Image 1 (spheres, rainbow, N blue to C red):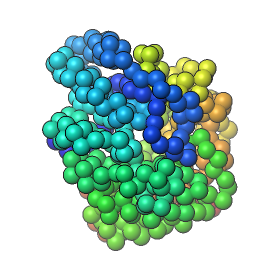
Image 2: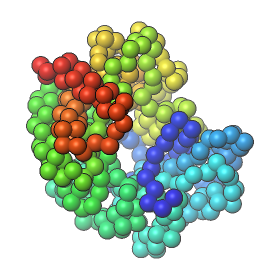
Image 3: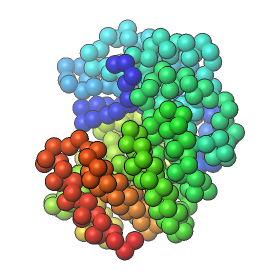
Image 4: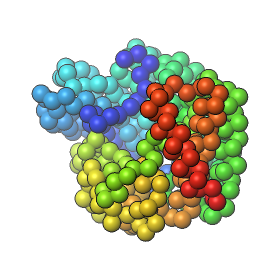
Length: 370
């Protein structure tokens, strides 16, 4: 599995282990409000692994073990022990391990261990862009990150960029900077923070800059903000809609004491005593907010149920500004994809091409007045 990129599919269960509730940074937009010194003991981790591997035994389920935090690499010695235990199990269901890291706490011997085990141990780096933006958002951490280590050890792994309201006007600059460092970019607008109405105009401007960049550099994979799922636009069945994320079915998230949650957003490190809504693969359309049921993005509009539970809203809620910003991203994606189509840069089947062109027209027609 050399150069593996973290991915999940319908046959994958992600076993998320919170190794510690502690972190060495204080990111401005962090949703984990209740950090502490709690850590996961080895016997708890082993019990979780035993339980999850036993459930998957004899099935086609693929198991991905994700180490989470806080900053999980503060417990790297513990991570290595859990990794060794996973390999002792020798389960045919096991796929790989993945760790989400800010990249600042890895020691030289940790890096060497990672290089030796990179076939099935992957580090996903969180990086918000330029030194100016990274230092502003993430505790002056830019100069603490060994960028060549991450780029060279896992050359196909994207960096994870979170875009804060204060730094939205730097979005294009930050994405391009990450590309210049040698990374593709998985980016999103920060969830659960205050997005003001003025953000939509800024987002539109930044997306235009990125479209220009990607058309000049067709060898670069567009960031995820300009890879919205156009092929899923226009679902005809509006009686039910699919759950956007894997919470509760494809994600089994365990806190430091071994309690299981639908995802990390429901844990006490985020917010205590959160309601746990009924999670299912599809929902009745009547649960959607007014205006969503007839939207062309029905069924493909990203919604974080956990974030909405934290802010004590209905599971599928968006503010008016959040809604508009999602539409802007779909619209920008449609413009970029159409230009790529005209320049012969897409590798799609005839069926996919026809569907894409139809949905590009649908999106641009629906959102022409944004």
